[in-house]
Amino acid sequence: MEDSQKTTAKKAPEFTLSDETGEPRSLSQLLQHGSLMIVFYPGDFTPVCTRQLCNYRDDIKTFSEQGIQIVGISGNSPESHAKFKKQYGLPFPLLTDLNNLVARDYGCTSKLLFGAVSRAIIIVATDGSILYKHVEATPLTRRKSDELLQIIKALPRA
Image (tube, rainbow, N blue to C red):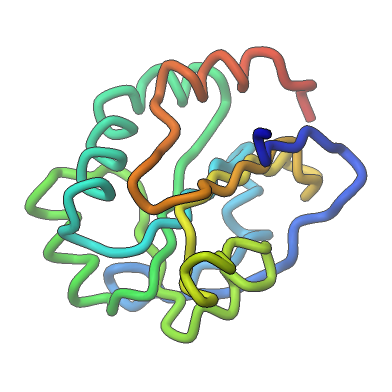
């Protein structure tokens, strides 16, 4: 059974987190620039996370053409994010959720992982409504760009 949801009823919880430069970024601020794909991921420099974020990097133009901006969120420090972003040329902000409070607010923790952050994709419309949510069952699986772009094309515009 897939844990994906398509919904327009639920509002995305507001957050403010530091990016890789230490600057605060809020959900409402990010949504002023378009719809947002939030990528919750377990950690910088891990094999699956690196492949996942590099896959999104490689297709950033196509995401942009669909009106989607990307932001990554993990518990890593801004310093770790800065190194990770530089090493892999990631063209989107990486935000620090040190205590995983935002991940919990978004329901992106796993019972199988004893409350640790699961890899998850949340797509939020400019009005703050959650259009799509998928939380991976295991840390070894991930949504690839081509699959996400098909989903995005089928979503209502907001």
